[in-house]
Image (cartoon, rainbow, N blue to C red; front, top):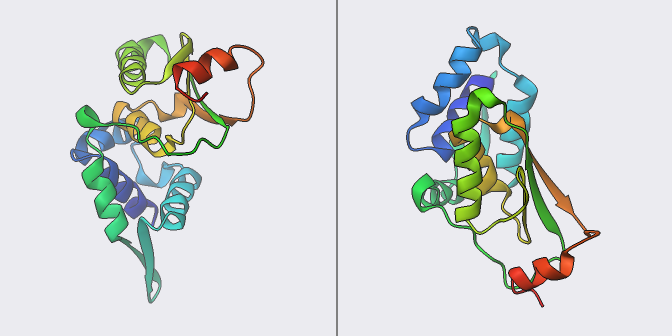
Length: 173
C-alpha cells in the first residue's frame, strides 16, 4: 500500500510523476525505508477528502482515484495553478513557513516566487500568509519542488500585528 500511495500521490498531483519520484529514489535506495507514516497520512487525507477510495481484495488493498480526484488532477497544473477564494472568510489565516537549505536555493526561490504569483502576502522572507484554505495547492507546489519536508502550513486564528493591513490587502473589510 505504501508504494501504491507514493505512486498515487505522484500521479495525482503531477503530470510528470517520474520527476517527483527521482529525489525520493535518490534519497532512499530501498523502498522499505520510505517514511510509511507520511504516506499513510497522505493516503488517509486523500481518502477522507473522497479523492481516492480504498478497495480490499483478499489480503491486498488497492487505491482507485475517484471522479473528484480525477477532476482535481485536471485542475492542478503547476504553471496555471490558481488559488480559489471562497465567498465567506472563516476568519483564519494560513501561514506558510519554510526553512529550505542553501543547497536547494533554486527550489527556495521558486517557492517564494510561486507563492507571490498566487497572491500570498510575504510577511517575512520565508513566511507567507493567505486568508483562505490553500493546503492542497501548497502541498502540490512543495511536492513538485521536492521541498515538502522544509515547509510548514499553519492555520492561525489571530495576528498580533498588521491584521488590519492584511484585511485591506485581501479585501476582507
